[in-house]
Each structure stands twice: as C-alpha cells, then as structure tokens.
Length: 235
Image 1 (tube, rainbow, N blue to C red):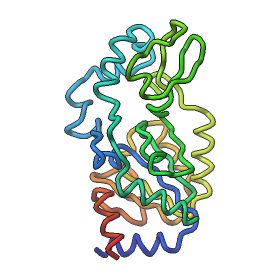
Image 2: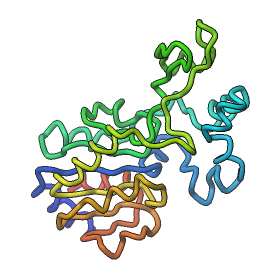
Image 3: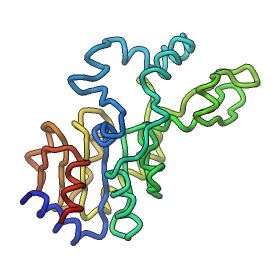
C-alpha cells in the first residue's frame, strides 16, 4: 500500500499528467494482450505476417478473416482504469492519453485528448474512393459500394506512424510534469522511443512485468492497473 500512497501523492501534486498506455490496460476489459505469454504472438507465428501491409494488399480476404477473429472485440467496454484517466482529464490534471491500442476504449471512456499511435478499429476507409466507414459496417462487409476494398485505419506492419500523431505525442510528453506508463512492456517501436522525450522527475511505471525503463522510474508498481485504481479509490 506504500507504493499506492506514493502514487496518490504524486498524482495529487501533478497538473500535467500524461498517460502512455499499452495492451495491459485493456486486458481487464476482455481484450487479450497478444504479446504476453498467453497471447497470439506466441501461439501463431504468422500473426505479424498476416497483419502486414503487404499481406493486406495481396490477401485482403484472409487478412479480414484473421483481423475480425483476433483483433476486434466489439463488445469490450472501458474499465475503471480508462474511466479514471478520463476523470483526471476532466478535473484539469491530465493533458490526455497516448495509446498503442487500437480498441478505442479511451475514447469510449470519454477521454477528450487521445493520441492513438496505431490507429483505431472504429475508423476505416475505402482505398479506391476514400469513403469513410465505421466498425459495424466493416464487420458486415469490407467491400465498398464503389467496388474498392475498405482498409482499417490501423498501422499495419510495414506502415509508418502518422506524423501528426507522432508530433502530438511528443509534444504532450515534453509538457508533462508526470508521465505514467501503463500496461506496456515498451517493446514496440517507434512508439516506445517517444518516452525518451520526457525530462521530468515523475516517471511512473505500472505494468505486470519488467521494462527497460524500470531503473529510471521514480515509482514502479508491478500490478494490474485496475487493481491499482481500486486501491487508489480506497484511499
């Protein structure tokens, strides 16, 4: 509980918190962490190939079979950790969230400033006529009315991150007085490299398992973020 008390003191004293989140925050919402020991990347070595730009362009039907079965969880709801972050923003103590997730749960939790580095399953567009589509439409068909193929606005392997998102993320991290990294092993690049732009004193890591940033952090909590938020609320 001492770690939780320390975290609460830091948060209470902060005015420009930035959250950097990964798959771990969405596991309690029923979305698997595909890079964990139980995840997809261990059980299916072809995942990175299937989720690549080249594979999508050459085998869109097979891509969508995999994408819909393994990457989309339309019934997932924000958990108390997503809602807690949104509340801190409403209180004026958070600058927002930078996430590696494509599940859209931070937005569903009503966070206003969310930089989705790897895109979102809720945004899709036709490669031929550029018409936009929502998730429900894509779940029914990935063929546009013009005859083109609809592509999810998610960053596939072999594709660069959006420059606007990169710049916004870096700007937020530079401005932060507290940077809280949640549910990520920081093994996905270039996203993880943006952490290096933080020069403040309050680097906090909340993750089940070690990251390369542990030795640089002011506070490390090896626990599930939902459990951490519950303990914070008890205080």
